[in-house]
Length: 279
Image 1 (tube, rainbow, N blue to C red):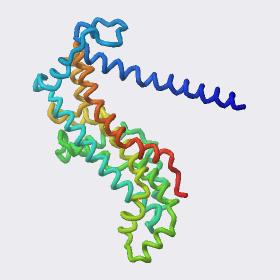
Image 2 (cartoon, rainbow, N blue to C red):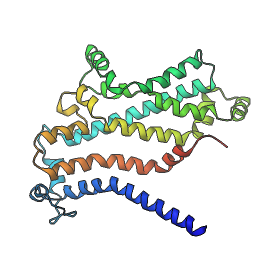
Image 3 (cartoon, one colour):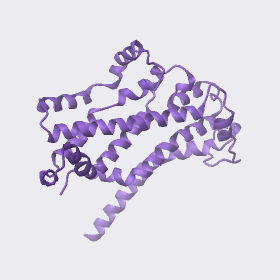
Image 4 (tube, rainbow, N blue to C red):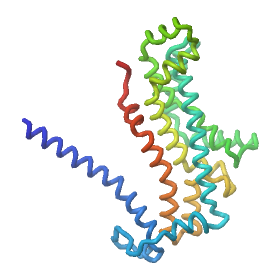
C-alpha cells in the first residue's frame, strides 16, 4: 500500500514536471535568443545556449532604439497603467463586495446576479462603445482610456463577496460594541482578514492590464502613449522584423515586471487561491 502511494506521488511529480516544461521551455528559449547575435538567432538550429554570449541586444533596445521606439516610456506606461488600474479595481471591488455581502443595500439580491452575468459578456463587444465614449470626451491617446475601463470588474466583486459573506458576524458585533463605525469595521476588521484574496485579485488584475494588447492598440495612436505589448507588436513589424535577438531582448524586458510581482505576492496568491472561508 505504501509503495503504491509512493508510485502515485512519483507519477504526479513527473506529470507536473512535464507540464512545467511546456511553460518553461519557450521562456528559456526567449531568454537564450536574447543573448545571441542576429546572425546566430536568424540561423536557426537547435542550439539552446548562445555560442557567442552578447548583451548588445539589450544595450541597443534600451539606449539606441530610435525615437519611434521609446522602450523606457512604453515600460513606464504599462507599469503606471497596471499599478493605478489594479489599485482602483481592488478598492472598488472590495467596497462593492462588502456592501452586497454585509450591508443593507437596496435590491442587492438583484444586483449580484446582474454583476455575475456581466462575466459572460465578451470583452471585445465593449470596444466600439468605449471607443466612441472616449472619442466624444476627447480622451483618446491619454492615460484615461488605458485605466478607466479596468476600474472595476465583476470577477473581483464575486471573488470577495464569497469571503465577506462567510465572515463571522461575531467579530463585527464585537467591533461595533467597542464603538467602531461601519467604515472602521470594514477597514480594520474585515479587510486585514481578506488580504490573501485581495492579493490574488491584485495579481490577476495587474497581469490582465499589463498584458492587454488589443484595447491599448485601439485607444492610443502616438508612440509615446503606447504600452509595452503594443510596442513589441510594432517593433515586430518594424525595425526588429529581422532582428530576433533584439526582439527577444525587448520581450524579456517586458516579462520581468510580471515575474517580480508574482514572486513578491506568491505566498498571498497561494493563500488566496486555497482560501474558501474562515474557520
